[in-house]
Length: 384
Image (tube, rainbow, N blue to C red; front, side):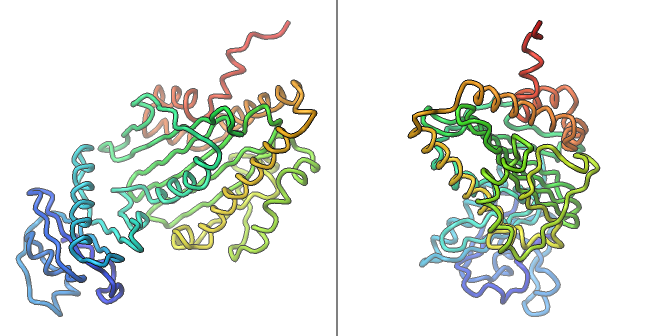
């Protein structure tokens, strides 16, 4: 029995409806309130022991079910319809990948799907971060999605093809201050959940910082890592004071989460592309990463303020009678390529991807999606 009742039954009194769906028969049933027992009875499931003590026993049948609790609707019928639709969509997605549907919970708060409550296998734990960074930056900075080949946009691998990776590339329009923005979501059940995002400014703005976000969860959230930074393209102190510190020092100062120091195991003791304003944390639990949590607020601030910095740089560039010289543009390109090369040599994700998705695919993925700048210099003829 894997019926998920969203914790204690009385914890969500405003639920509009609960829906249960039986994967083997596509049967679904929704009922008002949060009567999970009634919903389960209609698709042939036994109630959890904690609920059986308070409710009449229901028929027992082996299988799996998704139970979805929804609230925020003035009509429970609309909530019920949404519950069934989401349950059906989850089931269809799992079947397409040849995977079993685990107990899944979805909460609709204020009319919006709170995907952070989804089971980690059915949906990436960090998908809310991917959605939010798009909301903060894509439209604001004039970005358009650049379609990837299907085999690079999504891939399954690992044992039983349980591991999945999804990738998204955006490019700036002519008036955008952005050259390239990529996002990567990785999920391998409870073993690994990851989100990575990197945004590169246009070379014509000079060597501005690169936005980087890394979020990792291992062993069912027993080990968590949070990293957000504006990677400096130059190492002198004056660079950080001009382009990074004025925007981020306040964020770090007001955060309730202590700022830690990343291990030097992979990147060395004085990483070239880590700024003094990097926010790094090893949180004790996942709650601080979810929408509304302390690290969620840090994540939003680092992304939002990066947009502020880029917009100000673009305005300054467009209004200046002395725009960036060809030398500064070339320097920006060279340093962004160096940033990619540095990561290809050190990023621990490369070995993980090779193990899960294969060496040949990973090599193509590095060149096309993750760090294409690392291979630009390879293709350029050597200067005599």
